[in-house]
Image (tube, one colour):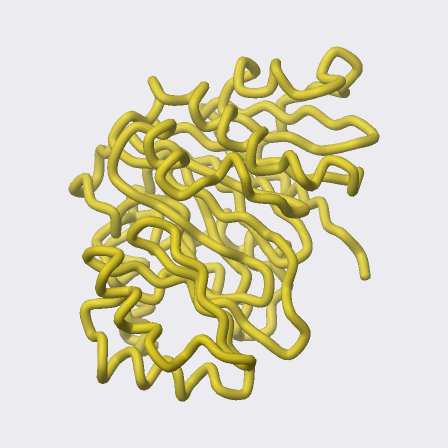
Length: 296
């Protein structure tokens, strides 16, 4: 049993409150996931630049890593044992090689023009507080509270899992065939970092999209290739998607107003959002892809 939240803001006036709303939603689902928590926030990007979210054993290592990088082309923002390094897009691979050589103990958690991703072991309120979620702003966010059933309680095993630029996934449920799907993708030279079934789902979707599928097409294929009971929420640069398995035994609720779309594992996750009393509240249908996005 885990908890999932998602918040997509239609009204730009709410963007300064995105982090505060998301932190409160995560805290509400503490009893569904007291082991670890995580979230992805989609904020402002810099033209021609990409954000690399890094995680290290302690903040000192990350500060040492940034020596000589913070200038007009490189920017660093520290958040406890995570850091967001903004680099020119053309130099991303060079920076990744430098990280692998000079700081092999530092993990690249995520990348993207707009996405920053944070996760850690502990209660949701503690994790969101460590990273300053309540002060973050942006257009949309997704988050997760984990009760581990399939793998160990570690930061690496916490959600969200990011396997593509500006793309991440959170998951409530269990995949029964994840080992077989993992082996099939390993034959395609796709590497895995954990034994978590959620990483399999995330990499499966990225693999499908790398082959040319749109996100909705990749999710439709997932209904055929991924067995189990699950609810997925997938974050992208422009919005987020929701998918429940064909039986849909894992709880999920959506509230939509003129100002936002909010997702939660339970209705109590949404009750403190502004204007919730006037929202269209519904349970997403089984095996149906839902997607909201900001159009350029």
